[in-house]
Length: 510
Image (cartoon, rainbow, N blue to C red; front, side, top):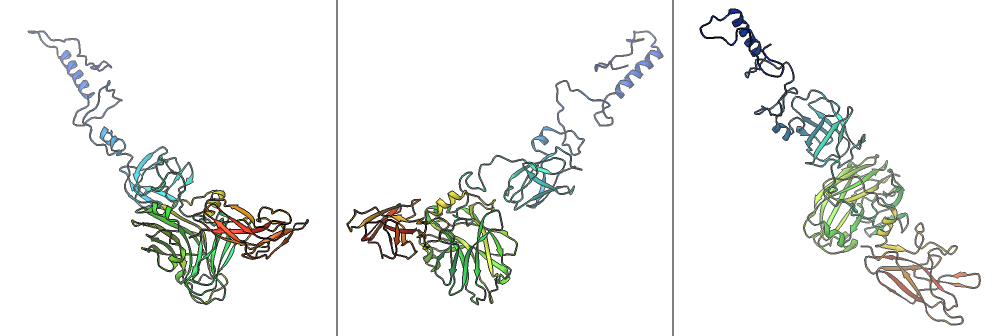
């Protein structure tokens, strides 16, 4: 054989080498040519005429000047690897139903990994279809469907096919929707309507502000007959709020539900892109034209000018930066709108409104189960906060001595739960007695205090008399109240040797 198996070419030995002035043997010559022919036939022509018949070791050297591979069986040069030519998807389109292309991918195979830049943010479950080979679900954490915002516009996504679906590689999180990584994303308080310190049902009859669930107020464009009430939520949350025109009402005044963000918090959103979102459901007789509810976001450049000023249209620099109509149905659905807030924002009001038409039926209502205001261009998964935290946030604006499930002004003679006693005076004397109250949270400002006697008569106090601790009510106003943002003190002249008693509420709402 011309090659010895180690890559060396061996010339046919008999008759070689030839000797000058001797006759060359035809046998030796022909055998030598046959070896040359066999050896050349075992070489690889550089013009590509022949193919390798076995693996070729390079002995630690490199193949240089490789062309760009285009077929799955082609060699790949370093440049292609650096450019991710075999794994980088192009012509990417769609947000929830994503399509893309990749040269010479003929089928999906378990373990394949691909990269692409998302064309837009997803708003729900996602599928990926490469080269029209078939749409496959994109999951996270194994088999979990993607949530809204899991893929952001322009995000570099890495997916691996597991034989059934594409699993999205979760990248290190440096922000949430362009906002802070940790802490509270939702800038609204009581956004799932868990806290109802004032009661659970409220009549709205005019343009006047009526506070309902904590931090949320309702009003109408004019005289109307409407009820804002606590209802069971259609989601995992406990409650929602229902804005309902009373059955038989012919008033077509706008019905509003809004919350004002305190200036200390609102000013941090200047020049920031934000998204508002709300989960809404329509009643069977919802009467708004085209079943439309409007998402509303109003900004101003004043400082804590409050709800009355907002409704009067006298907020400084008042602008409705979002006033977006959404068509709702009997199925609870989340709707959203995005806007970049202007410079100079100092106060924000978020909410909804609708304009009823005709005569109200028994179920002419819209229910709100969640409401979120957050930094970023995507409505992310609704933020769930502990109820204790939510109550504490609410109590910056409204607090009471009554039990959480007791409406202020309720008769509490039987239990005295929520009663605040003054110190005892000396027996046989009639002197002013002093009571002190510490609010559960420091309030936004010095609060407006309302007090009741034990049967719920406003601006009256009670006293406790006799060995059986009998309650005497309706003793008139206390002598004085001194208050700040931490609490208040009051004095009363009960004309008895027993303590004066009140129950109270305190409000520093906007």
